[in-house]
Image (tube, rainbow, N blue to C red; front, side, top):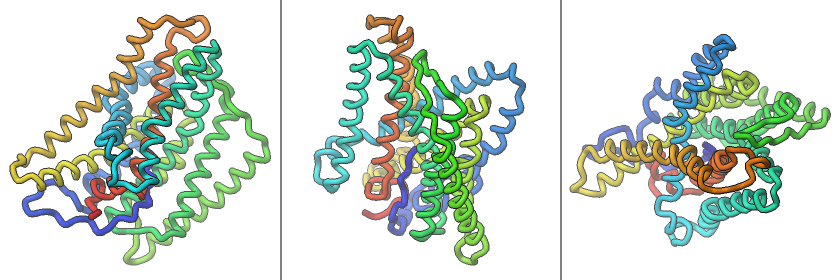
Length: 382
């Protein structure tokens, strides 16, 4: 998730008479559950995974691959459901301003065309390096995706808890997220020269020593400033910190980033990233269903529950379709040069496409200029 969310949210809507759930409440799911679901559980389970003997890694990998079908892959599919719902109105209608419509057009149509053109170029030229470029792009964006989501969780939780950060505090925390991601990305490039996804290799870009030293120094400075902000807010009466969001921010920037260098942690951490996302999706979709229920006098009180069940079931199905079913079918019916591109090129294409496209979708859906995020995530008046 890339919640670009310094969302300027109005006061949450009061709960309509007879409303169920907690639309407009001060927690996303619940005070204690929020801490666990937004990252706290990873502080317990990731170290346990890291302490497992090396012989356990294949079993752990198999377990996490199965879990991916019910958590990681659905979290991508959920973004497609939300983004493309009423897409014609979003991209071509009049409810959004021109800038937001252009964002929906670029992310919804432009990015897929660009990615598919790159994949087509690879096959037409017989050059797998074009596929490798997209692997490099994913490696570049994935860390930023994780750390920005951590920052977004802090901002979202601060709105729910009514413990707002001022503009200067948000600027420091945001820059710190960027710099921590850069340190992680550059370090990974120094540590691993070549990576492979489904038989396609992509290569690291070795950073010069001076750049690494400069980025690390800047990250240390912003980390110190960020810790000062967090500690000072803990000591100030009436301000305080949103606990769940703070945990999400810290684990995303530091704990998870360090985990990328441990094979066991690398297998487990994506599940917690997806869990963070699905918590926000749950609140967004639940609020949306409740609002629609109260706009319809004949709607059943079970409508929000039924909506969530069908939404999540659809996400699981679409995740399986995009990550496994369609690429596997194409792998069997489309002839191509398997010597050059390997026997699983379509799996590579679909996995990379979904990961990259997801970043652009989220960057539109969760930004503060998007009225849909304010309305359904926080129940704010438009």
